[in-house]
Length: 409
Image 1 (cartoon, rainbow, N blue to C red):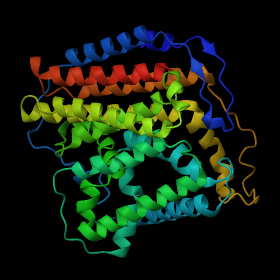
Image 2 (image 1 turned 90 degrees about the vertical axis):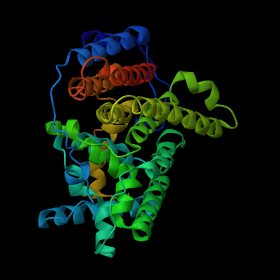
Image 3 (image 1 turned 60 degrees about the horizontal axis):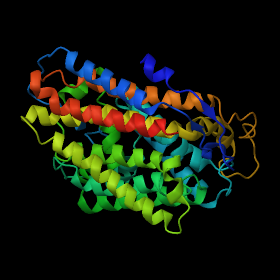
């Protein structure tokens, strides 16, 4: 890890930005050295980890972490009710609250802090999403009885996740309060309508990508991921997410600056996102099509912590996460930006760059590298010898793409 951390040096001044979370500082990084170091460490760990037998009976993610599984306890209902109220408040704040991104609760609560903290929380706590999911809660209240079953695949989610990736990686102003409120409200309507039309369990287990991915990330603690049997299409969905998130990061680097000023910049960015998602999904699909059923399952398992690491690292870029966390206490006291200031002014004492430009890049590289090392150290255990080759190649390609893209900042 020392070469990875030590390589992030050479700060260059950033161009000014109107929003603290919108600045894009450039940090000179020896990309070749960083990429080679990351790939070498991941490959060595994946090859050296000793094999260990696991039970041939796979543990279903829905039996452990998915929000739609079974009945809820009284405590879960209380926590979920609170989360549902918070989500509805974010929608209202986004649509009718202040236009200023720094004075509206919706951007900081959802895009800025909510998504990365949910990923990190599931990565550490495991079953967090089962206690949070506001959409499952809403559908359980609207339509209590549900005879549907999980279909055993997630192919619809591969298509449904693209609008989210487009919003986060292509849309010019993902922190605009009106856009955040509309996106959250639209996703809620689509999710509830899908659940009512196809059944709550069927839709949430196969077509709702956010909850599906968080459920899988929740399998990482206690090595539950190593005993998980992925549904059909899981590897492709994870590959699409990794490719889409990395393209969003790439679009904010100097490599994309010449395209960003063109009249059809959004169209070109949409095309680039499609290519990145296709590359990520194809690579994951090929790795998951090689060898025995166990080899194919391992390929999908390896991408779960990798995707979680990429999601967290991308959210740290431009200090968006740190800015949002600092704003949240004041915004909770004034969610609509009406000047109430019950818990203080949101921007009071705001530090737009608590880690500095170099610190942000170092943190991103460490997060991506550690996530892939976690996958390399745990996921290939059931495989021996050449059986590990596809998953090693997949992890090496993923960490190389992630580290290279983030180093461009």
